[in-house]
Amino acid sequence: MSDRRRRKTSLLPRKRPRQDRSRFTVEAILEAAADILVRDGYAALTTNRIAERAGVNIASLYQYFPGKDAIVAELRRRHGAAERAAARDTLAASPGEGLEVTLRKLIARGVAAHAVSPELHRVFAEQLPAQRYREIQRMDAAVFTEMRRFLERSTTGVPDLELAMWMVATTTQAVMHNGALERQEDIASGRLVDELVVLLTRYLKRRPGRSPGRRSRG
Amino acid sequence: MSDRRRRKTSLLPRKRPRQDRSRFTVEAILEAAADILVRDGYAALTTNRIAERAGVNIASLYQYFPGKDAIVAELRRRHGAAERAAARDTLAASPGEGLEVTLRKLIARGVAAHAVSPELHRVFAEQLPAQRYREIQRMDAAVFTEMRRFLERSTTGVPDLELAMWMVATTTQAVMHNGALERQEDIASGRLVDELVVLLTRYLKRRPGRSPGRRSRG
DNA sequence: CTATAATGCAAGTAAACACTTATATTTGTC
DNA sequence: GACAAATATAAGTGTTTACTTGCATTATAG
Image 1 (cartoon, chains in turn red, brown, blue, cyan):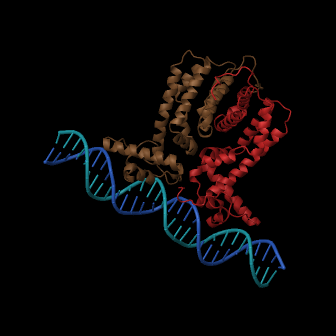
Image 2 (cartoon, rainbow over the protein chains, first blue to last red):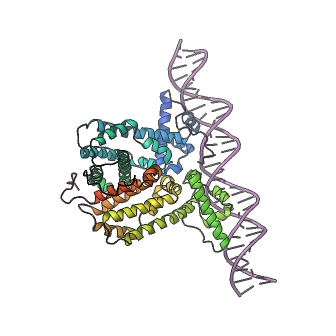
Image 3 (cartoon, protein in one colour):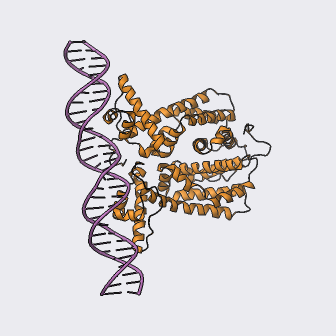
């Protein structure tokens, strides 16, 4: 646990399994780790417990992973890949659509992704050392570029597009994530998506010439 | 660390110090814990380390706290009290003001509060078991009531005020918190506050009759 | 001054922790 | 079937963890 004890900071797997036998072992390790995370949280995640629950010897675990954080990193890698692909598809498939329609699609996809394994999602976002998580959590470069291109032709009256993108990403993530935990009824009824779409479209589509607030500083 | 080992789940102090001597001891413990949290993070926080850095015997620590989580809880209690009081004051002192002005005041206060000890703030929000944190982090009842009263007479075209309040609280917190870590220039220039005010005012002041999005479900 | 309560500390304990070594078993290849 | 590579595991290592016991010291009250 302590930073003292853990010298191996690599988050990469140590060795790839080459036979079916070891592939099952690695899968069992990952499943056991996810199970412990959602049941008891990150504080209860230990290498001995992972191996025990996976029905695998602790030494086998250390043959494929340098430590528990590498196991968690692998879980996050798999978890995030699907979501990023979905976002990329949505952006690519709607070149001529309006801001609101595309935003609604993106948000609906995100909400759906949160519904797949919300408990694991929650652990990732709430209990993990956030510095490392953010790198993975961020949009990858392709999605970012696509999003910027889309917003460049869809927004009006936004003074700093890069800051606006940060605001959109931050609020979207917060609403989706906390909503999955706290507003399940509003998700089921579609109200949460509606409200988030309103929030973002009105933020991004300001009337030209009617720029509210005192923006005379920066 | 593990949930197995810690049986005392009470987050309350065990005993109040009655003499100056022990009051200093308790303060030293709290300061040492905060120091470790901001320097090395929650994972490195152990009772033995706290006592060592505080220059206090480990047994003394256990006389006043049932465990490290109670120490953290006490830190959070102190940390949150000032902020809540500031928010309450702002709301109480501006009965006739407009939405944008009051919102700007509230946000500016929040940003300032995050600037006091941002590292500790960050640890609280990022590294601590969030379930327990949320209870404390939430607005207390007085602020909530005041805020609702204020919004009831300041918003237009908002279909569900309770949901809107949740949206405002969620986005405000996410922007302020992540901004303190990632957008320090935009905070210094005031841009972040500007953008947040725009986001919230446009969300809360929708033109009546022009309700965007398909709201035909709930 | 004395009795009593409050406080402080040295020195532990058992359990959990991350991680390794040495050895045995299984698998693919020729 | 023989042999080497891949895989699995029993049985540890030393360290760190949360937390306690027993006793000495200091402050307060009568």
